Length: 464
Image (cartoon, rainbow, N blue to C red; front, side):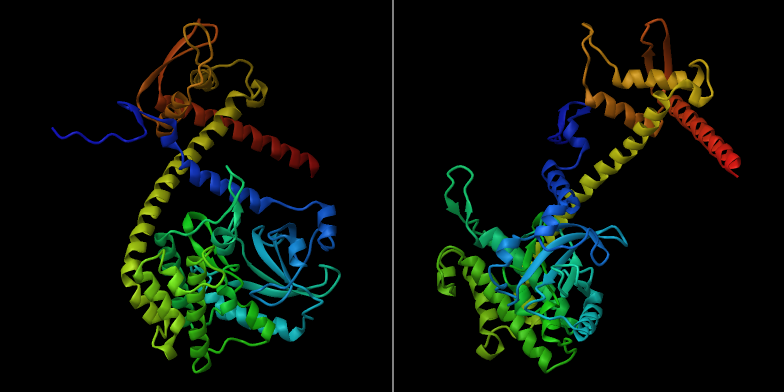
C-alpha cells in the first residue's frame, strides 16, 4: 500500500502542530507591521514641527510622515524636480488610510487650473485603479492647512510598510552583524520578476493611452510591497505640475510611450549596477547577469530609433517566456495565501465561539434571569472548565492550545463525539456530545440576547 507523505506540521498520527492552524508567521508579521504603520500618527508637537496646522486637514487626520521631513527640505526630489513631502493620513469619510504627497507651496503656487487638470488626470487613470502594479491618483486638492500656505496635495492609495526600489537595492544600509555599509543586490530572478510586473504596468497604461512618465519610473518612486510585488507610484504628478492632460492618441502619446520604455531600461540598469559603478552600463551589468536580461535592457535603452523595443507590446513579446514563469510563481503564491486565509477563516469562527462562551459562562446569573446555575448555563460552565481548566495528575495547570482549538473546532461543527466533563468540586460528572454542547451554548446566548433586548425596550419606554 502506498503511504501518503507526512505533512511537516504533523507531530504524531492524528495530531498536528499548533502552527498548522494559523497563517505563515513571516506573512503574519509583515501584515501586522503594515496594520500598525497604517494606524500610526504624529503627536501634536510633531505635527506643529512638520508645519501641519490642526488635527483634521482637508478631511484627513492621523498624519504620519513616510519620508524624512528634514531631508525633504534639503533639496528637491530628483525625480519630480520639486520640493515635496509624503504623509500617511486617514480619511474622515471612509476611515481608510491614504498616501498624501504635498508639493511645497513656496516653489509651486497652486491654482484652480491645476485642480481642474488634476481632476481630468484622475478620471483618465480611474479605469486602472485595480491594476496590481499601478498606484493611481485618487484626487488632487489645494490646502492651506499645511505650513499655513496654499499647497497642492496628491492623494493615492496607501501601501503601508512599502519600500522604494532605491531603498531596497541601491542605497547602502548597515550590516546587522558588522555594521559595515552594504547593498542588497537584487538576484536575477528578482529582477525578472520586477521587469515582468513593470512591463505589465506599461502595457496596461499604454493601451489606455496613458504615459507613466520617467519620473514615476525612478527607483525612488517604484514601491516594493508584500510578497515582492512592485507598484509604480506618483502617477499623474508630472502631468498636473505641467498643466497637461495626457493626450489620448498619437503622435504625442507614442513619443511619451517611448520615453517610458527607456525609463524602464534605465531603472533596470540602475538596479543591475547598484554599487558596481557610479555610471551604470550594460557592459558592467553583463558581468553579473545573463545575456538574456542584458539583451532586453539594451533593447529598452536603444528605443525604436536605435533598433530596440518600440512599444509595450514588443516588450511583452520579448519576455513572454519569463512572464509564464512569473505566472507560475504568482499561482503558487496565491495557493499559499489562500491556504493561510482558510486557516484564519476557521480561526474567525472560533473567535465568535469564544466570545459567546465568554459572555455566557462569565456572566452573573441575575443577568440571565437565573438564581442557580442549571440547565444550559450549567453545561456551558462545565464546557468552559473542560476547555480551559485542564490539570495534570499533580494538579499543575496544563496549557495545551491544541486541546482548546480541537475542542472549539468540534464544538463549531457540532460533531456527535461525546466528552466527559467533571465539575470543579469533583462531585458531578456529565457526558455530552459536542452537538448537545453547541445547542446549549446557542440557547444560553439567545437567552442573553432576549434579556438584553427586553431591558433596552424598557429603558426606551421609560425615556418616552
